[in-house]
Image (cartoon, rainbow, N blue to C red):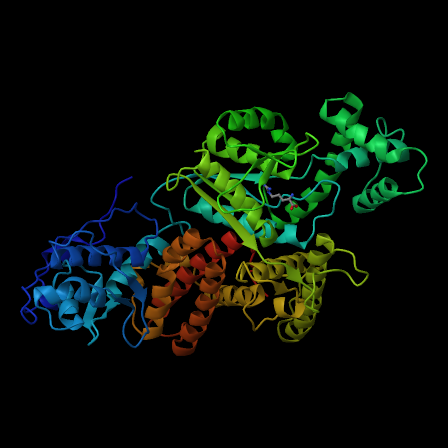
Amino acid sequence: MKAKPIATVEAKKKDKGDKGGAAPAGNMPAGKPAKMTVLKFAPGIMRPIQKQIKQLFADAIKGAFPDVKDQPEPVIQPSRPQFGDFQCNNAMGLFKAHGKAMGARSPKDVGELIMSCLPANDLLDNVNVAPQGFISMKLNSKWLAKLAKDTVLDVEGVDYKADTKRNVVVDFSSPNIAKEMHVGHLRSTIIGESTCRILEMVGHDVTRLNHTGDWGTQFGMLIEYMREAYPDYVNNMPDLSDLQGFYKAAKKRFEDENDTTNFKKRAQMRVVALQSGDKESLLAWKTICEISRVQFNIIYDKLGVTLEERGESYYNDLISPIITDLKAKGFVKESDGAQCFFPEGQEVPLILVKGDGGFGYDSTDTAAIHHRLVTSKADWVIYITDLGQETHFFKVFDLAKTVGWHTPPKTRLDHMGFGVVQGADGKRFRTSSGESVKLIDLLDEASRRAEVELKRRQGDADEKTGSALSEAEFKDAAEQIGYGAVRYFDLKQNRKTNYKFDYDQMLDPKGNTAVYLFYAYARILSIQRKSGKAMKDIPNSELTIGSNSERALILHLLKFPDTIETVMSDLNLHWLTEYCYDLCNILTTFYTENRVLGVPEENSRLLICEAARKVLLKCFNLLGLKPLDRI
Ligand code: ARG
C-alpha cells in the first residue's frame, strides 16, 4: 500500500506566515521552523489526530532545544473549546529545565520559541501561547474536511490500524462445566467480545480462548453421580437441561453424612480413574461437558460471541514437564508438603503441586501461560475475570517474568479485572429466592421489557403513520434493544467498579444507554430517507465545514482513532462508550443549530450526517450492538 504524508505538498511550499519564524524572545536565540517528520498512513485508514500533533511538537521541541538530550515527550491534550482544539503543555517544564539557562524570562518565551519552531504544516491554525506558556491551537477546517472525506466518506467502512501487529491471546468468558454461567461470566463475555473486536479491527492476530473449568476433583463427584442416577447414560444421553440441579444433587450426595454406600470414596477414586484415562469415566466426563457446552453456546449465539474452547483439561499433560523444568532451574520451593513458587513480596505462593500430589487452578494457569507465551508465541495475553482473581494472575505473571517466558516490553500481560454486578439492594445479584441469576433469563427479561415499550410507542406511531411492525419484527427489534441495553450498560461502567443491575436505567431512552444511541442512529437514517437522496449519489466533494457545530461534529468523528488508542493503552472500554455518547450529544447540537433539509447546505450536511452514521455504526459493531433502522 502506498503511504501518504500528513501534510500536502502545498503546505510545504506555503510560506511560514504566522506559524513559524517568530522574533527571538528575551535573550533566547531565534527559532526557525523545524523539519517535519512525515508520518506514514495507509490510504483510506483513519489517522489519530493527537498523534500527528504530537509529532509536530516533537519536531518543534527538537528544533527549539537541539542540544538537549532526552527531549521530553510532547504533552498534547484536548483543550477547552474557548481556547482551541488542543494544547501543548511542555513549555513550563522546559523553561525550568533548560529555558532559563538559555535566556528565557518566562515559560511564555519558551512557548513562543517552540511555536516558532513548528514545522510548516496545513493541519494547525491559530497557534497561540498563553502567559503560562501553554500553546493552544485550532485545527484547520479545510484539513478536517479533507480528512473526513478521505478516511470516512470515501471508504466502504471506517477503519483504523495500529502501528504494529501483535499476536494476542484473550482468555475470556471461561465458565465452569456443569455450573450455570453467572453474571460474572456475562461481564467477562461481554467485555471480552468487545476487546477482541477492537483488537481485530486494529489488525492484531487474536486468539479468543475459552478457558472453561472442565477438569478437577468435582468431576469425580459428577461422574459417580451420573453412573448412579443414569445407569444407561452410555446409550442414552440424559436430558440435563437443569445442569445446575444435577450439580447440586451430586454435591448433596457427596456431602451426605448418612451415606452408607461410600459415595465420597467412590467419587475420589473416580477422579483418579478419570485422570488416568479410564474409558468409561472419560465418556461420562465428555457427556457432561457436551451438555454444558450446548447451554453455553445458546448464550454465545444470542450475544454473537465467538470463542475457541481450550479448557483446563487441555493443559493437563503439559503441567508435569513444566514443573520438572522449573524445579531443575531452582524456582520451586516446598512448603507444607506442596511444591510452590513464591513471587516477590508475596506471602501466599502459587501452588504448582498440591500436598496430595494433585494439580489445581494454579498449576493449570502456569502451564497455560507457558503454552501461550512460549509455545504459541503470543506477545500479548489478556485475562478477563472479576477482580477477585487479580492476585492469582499477578502471581502467574510474576512467575512468567521470573522464569523468562514474559519479557516486557516485547511481551505484554494484562489482567482485565472487573467489579461485581449487584442487585438493586447493593448485594451480589441473586434471584428473589437467593439463587444466582440465570443469564438467559436476564437477557430475555431485558428484551421483554424493551418489547413492551416498543409496542407502546408503536401504538402512538400507528395513529400518526398507520405503519406497523409484524410480530416477528417486534421480537427481533426487542431483542436487539434488550441485549444491546444490557451490553452497553455493562461496557459503560468503569470496569473496576461494582454496578447495580437496573433494567429501568439500562432502557432509559434519555440516558447514556444503547437505546439513546439507537435513537440517534435511527434519526440519521430518517433524515436521509426524507431527503429522497441516496448518500452515494452526493459527490463527497460537496462536504464543507461552515458552522461551529458542524466543525465540532467532524472533529469528534475524527477523534475515533485516538479513542481506540486510549482504549488499547489501558483496556478501559468505557472510553469508547463515552465517545459514542458524546457523539450523539454533539449530533443533537448539530441538528439544533443547522437545518439539514431544504437549505443550500443540504448536501454538505447530509454528508456530515453520513460520516457520523458510519463512525457510529463502527462503534456499534465494536460494542456488540445491532442498531435498528427505525424505532
Ligand atoms: N473458570 C474460571 C472461573 O469461573 C475463570 C478462568 C479464567 N481464566 C484462567 N486462565 N484462569 O472463575
